[in-house]
Image (cartoon, rainbow, N blue to C red; front, side, top):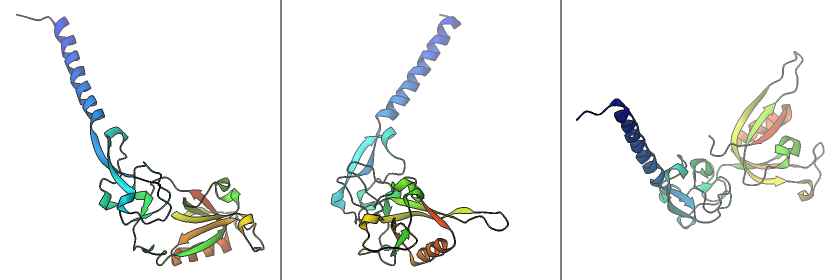
Length: 208
């Protein structure tokens, strides 16, 4: 029995479409395990197992970088606030013992950086955020000026407003950020403050 091309071509197309639909449907309904916060986790808090849970989510809704095992997150420090139900990513955690310590902040120092709202995202930077610091120099005698990012993903411990200050700081508006820095980075920031201008930009979520 012979089939005409008018029948075979549509039949073949229908079969191909059916197979594609099966593959796509299988992908959409497939689940994978990710680690999510079982409660709100505060900035710089040591993350314990009880604060986490493993959840099965649909593959399209799973972040490709999300942790897959609770034991891979427990014991780390939160780099910023992690709301309950949010998938936990490597960029949201800090390794304990690599400059931040299990108690306190290890070898790091807390440094107040004077910075008006106009230079820190119109004052939107808050405690728990991560910021990139951009250093710029004024125009030089030769007419040149430079700007570059000197530090990335610096933890903000506090955003200080004038009303929160009990003393005057001549030459500033007593507004700025308390930043968690290594001693070497603190020296870099100090030099930049003396020789140019610093800007704080909110770091990209999960960025390097």
